[in-house]
Image 1 (tube, rainbow, N blue to C red):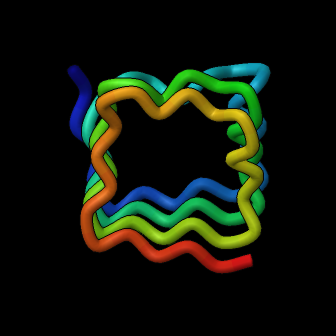
Image 2: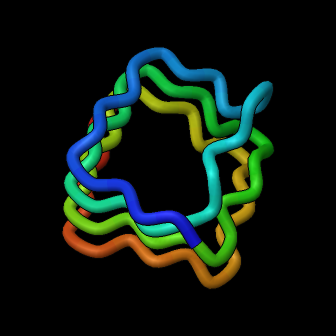
Image 3: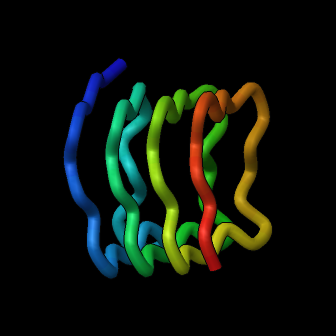
Length: 71
């Protein structure tokens, strides 16, 4: 499982190229599309999601700790 820290994602379309399974810490996701993606078994710690589309994303056993969602 991959560990990513402090990375910024801007306007990424994760429906075309999925986000790699792993743990994401203090990452920023701006205007990203996660619709219908599989985020199961992933960890997001201290991340910020701004204007992201998470509709119908699969979140089985997904961890969100100290995460901020805007718009």
